[in-house]
Length: 516
Image 1: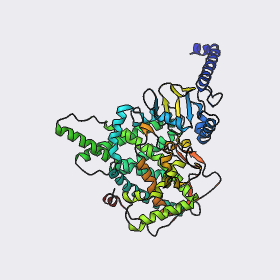
Image 2: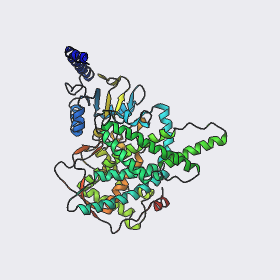
Image 3: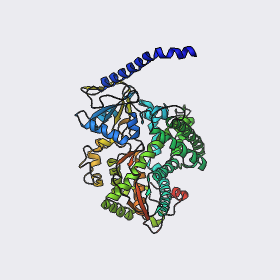
Image 4: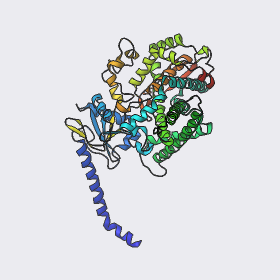
């Protein structure tokens, strides 16, 4: 031990020299990859700009956007925890990324360090025929019949939570209440009920909520995978969440084998799986290959992650934008009242929801104006020629910004204007190329109709059942990343009851009155 201690001082200069050499090589590597692209002239050793990203993500991404706008390139560079990154603002270039998701192109990761969190075999990391086969198997989960079942469940949960929000607002008077965490809890219950239905009991849901919160915290921290760090807690939480969802898959499969009616998303998936296996057995053919139960559990977690935070973001912005645009709010209320009444004690059917054209236009404009998942991270699996004079180096984390694309092409894009999606303008068709909130290409969101239905139902019920007013302060509507975007003040509001009575709805009535 003494000899080791005595040997340290002579080694110190060499260690310092080695460290300085590593720092120098890192800077050279960064500058070589950046070339003429706008970005920092130098980066902090090893961490890069990870600390500014974690402490103030809004400012970090605003700076990347300004850099990308400062030159004709349409993209900018930076460096995070040993990884070179590229932020893409230009819509045409973003489409290049979405169109080249393949082993020798770009790998969709969902998060800069997503594979460590989500595992290696989830839907977002698949390519080619395997990916096409899985999407084909998922398709029965989003038919009109399935969506109608989900619509019924969504309404039950929305009404239940709106009543609770009113109680909380009454207790908080004369002060406001913040909706962000309340909307998140509502959406988490919605996702659990729609995706896993009766297979998650109260105790399992409580554990699920705890683990999902750990996962959410880990998304916004530095990716240090060491004991005690939030990132590792998040990784272990995902394992437990997938274990729980795997149990739901097993229970659903057993129930569908008995010929019972589907009551949630996993039931529709397992019903089709059971049907295919039975058909093959009847004809004497080999049963088609299906993902294992744990793989399906991982895919369910993907769905939940995609639906949860993005949906919460859209609901909060819907409240904010309806409050600041009273003419739009009045038109929504008029349309909903013409089609559905809270006093009817009935659910909004799938057919009635499709009649709400203006409400749908409002929902689409909320998503365009405040695209919730602002960026879709990919990793370059090989050197990729992005433009004539710039090739993305292999290993680069690329961030196509769907948020920035939403403000390109559209008429007066900085103005909240639902009429752009109504007749005769139909900007959803004219500028479909720029509407990237649900992605594009092979990995375009398979559940986008479900997400849009959820936002429409919330807008219809919230505006019909509740009178609301934003508690406005300076900067309250500035963007905050959590990890999707929401109002900086967590959407503080004053609420009061608007209808004479709330619909008296139950799960049994929801399932018996579903229509589609």
